Image (tube, rainbow, N blue to C red):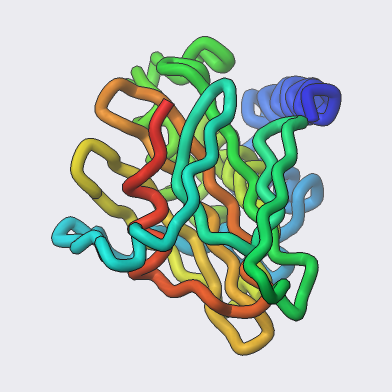
Length: 236
């Protein structure tokens, strides 16, 4: 996973250097064309033209459901999750099943943690645009739209959005929402269908810690109520 992350960062740096050159000597239409040729347009990646539709603030935690969850402890974080999923945090993998295994063995959860100011330290240039912490960085990423690119900064966050978004099924049916739960703010991108549910949870706590919970729910056992309950349990 670390090697994969290094390759992604190397690609980003190279791509952004090239994009900066284009941005300096070309107008918005050329920037848009350059980025779309590099990562794909909004027909190929529909979420690039989407932004959060609403902000969930009055979220009630389902305590009955929370009581059924199992606590997972990793070196960098802890979180309560449902049984029946393969759970991975970087290179550490844990598998716990119910007495009856899910009909699909592809149900999985991936966890990621980054310390406060991680993205600002990785891309210090964003400070020039009043992006000073992990939350503001992720917010700019989630509200980026390929149809609104006018300069290099817009292109940068659209590229980040394409990299930050994992497989969430049919993106044409995807939804994006901003949320606040107790001491946590974040963004949830998801699709719900009979063929399976996908949840991409980007979470920042009040200390600036960043968490990602990616859930591939092959048997469609989860809903938003349950996922928000899961999000409320994560900590470092």
